[in-house]
Image 1 (cartoon, rainbow, N blue to C red):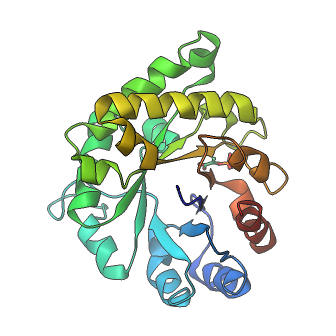
Image 2 (spheres, rainbow, N blue to C red; image 1 turned 90 degrees about the horizontal axis):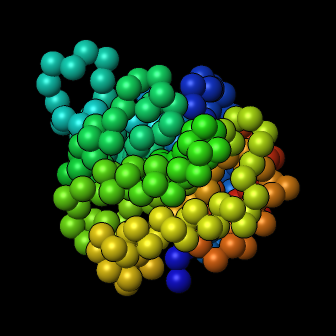
Image 3 (cartoon, rainbow, N blue to C red; image 1 turned 45 degrees about the vertical axis):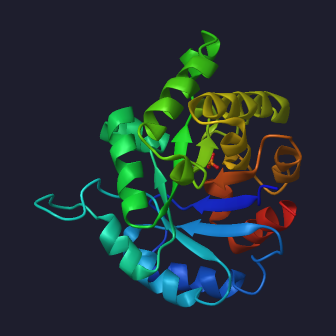
Length: 250
Ligand code: PEP
């Protein structure tokens, strides 16, 4: 019922020429029926990438946006600008942005609203730090972040959001959550969404797992009842590995 979604998060990697080489390498093969494929690239690569994958079925995402559509915000990029490029998705509230750029739940919410205002689909990241996990606060942290991100969203918009559950201690560390643990948290996030909206809405919202996902473990995660895809950093950077991730999601 929920279409699995594999999204590569390139973070601050790849130049335009590297992006074009990647698109050339994957465009015939990173598209599998019944799986949605998204590449979230740095802003500078988005014009070239949207052009290069046009008509292939691969969708393009940004990794951030400003919550205003325009204004005196030097160095920022808005949803209006992304939409005109043909971008469909935008990652919001990635832990690296929360940690290094001070993004709060309130800012995340304003960015989610800005995404919908510009017809972009947000991929909203939530997840706990290692010390929060050790203090058994994982569910509470995910609840607060989820409620914060969805604040004021209509049921119709909420249904389109993609949530990415990313335990921070598993991002880029090679340490992944077990599939059972990840499923327990994603299932819990769905109960939070059901409380915010209703069960039918919660049942259509896609929830990805992210944190050291690779071709060898992607099928295991996606085999879980409440995991509907993966947000992948490191393993999305090489064409072979990215194609294998998409194939593993079938
Ligand atoms: C991420 O950047 O969202 C991520 C999950 O990274 P990695 O796959 O490298 O852990």
